[in-house]
Length: 322
Image 1 (cartoon, rainbow, N blue to C red):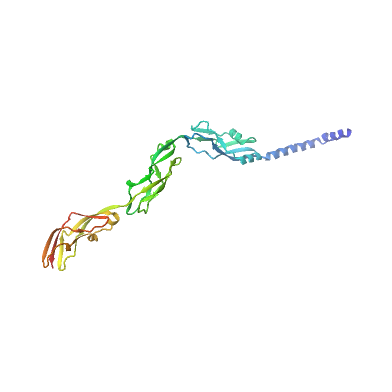
Image 2 (cartoon, rainbow, N blue to C red; image 1 turned 120 degrees about the vertical axis):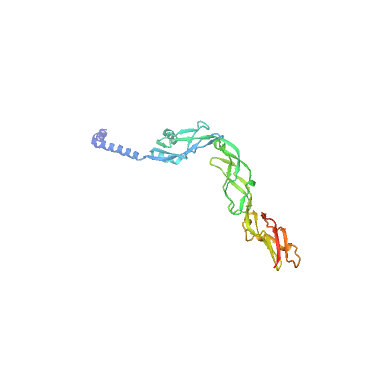
């Protein structure tokens, strides 16, 4: 027993300063080791929204996540990152515009104990709502490029099936709709009627039902006209040995019909279609001179084109032996 007391006395009382220094050093090292496990870090916390009335439409966009500055043990931070549970925003008032405050205290409760939330960005989320509205609106065919050259769209005969579609969305938007347009149609190079299904160009935030319509766009040849002045009347098949003359010598004609054909008619080739055929006029053999008053010229038919003589429509023809 005496030896035990002596040993304890030696341990406790001998070299007291050195022993206190060692104890202090051990405490400092333990605190330093613990301090190495405490970190500050930015993490992202996903956001989710509780259900709201189906008669309401959310106008604003909920941020997918908020950035949270946390301080705590590395292991706790790692656990929070691994869970990645979204923070559910519970709407206290159904359908009303609301501003949600995301305080550090609220996020601390979501992340669990052991972590200090230093800041949240953004700290507020504003949610805007409108009443859901549904109504039928007409469909308008949107043509951005039309047929070229000699073809055009017959606007009055365009049809859409269905002519009206259901538009669903925020009341402020739906009530302001005049129509819904189809996707833009490029009809460049089209020379025949167009029939096909076309999607609707639905503005963001709206829904349409159905989302496609059947469109019929009739295409026709363009009509045109022009007036040819100073055309010389042609006398065909003048008898051999005779000179044939007509007065007036010149006439003018209006040409109208398919534009591509009208463009091909000019003063040089008009005589192919408007002329006087001398074989139609009776003439006795041996006659020296003969006059034929008020002769109506022959007008050859040309499919798609009409010839109309303006001014002089009849000609006086004189046949004289040479």
